Image (cartoon, rainbow, N blue to C red; front, top):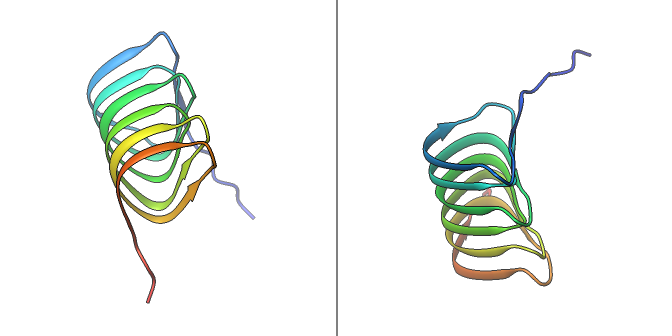
Amino acid sequence: MKTSQKNISIISKDCKLKGDFDFKGYLIIGGSISGTLNAETVITEKDSHITANIKANLLTIAGFFKGEVEATDTLTLLKTANVSACIKCGKLIIEEGCTFNGKIKTDVAG
């Protein structure tokens, strides 16, 4: 069986980016982003600060997030997450302790 190799991009905690971004593979965010973000898999760290519209297959939020999210597969909000968003996702996992304010629409297979 052939294994798929994925790119890994890291935005460190000291980085602040503003604009429109398109990432392939895995994106780990420790810093700040504002704008729009398209990615395959996104993982945010607990000290990250994101004000953006994000479209991703898999998204895990551990820090501050404000904006809109479209996760075609799974969105996970960890207990350290502080989220204010309109969310559309296939599956949603929310850990106890997460702060969430917004709307959620999950796609139901039918």
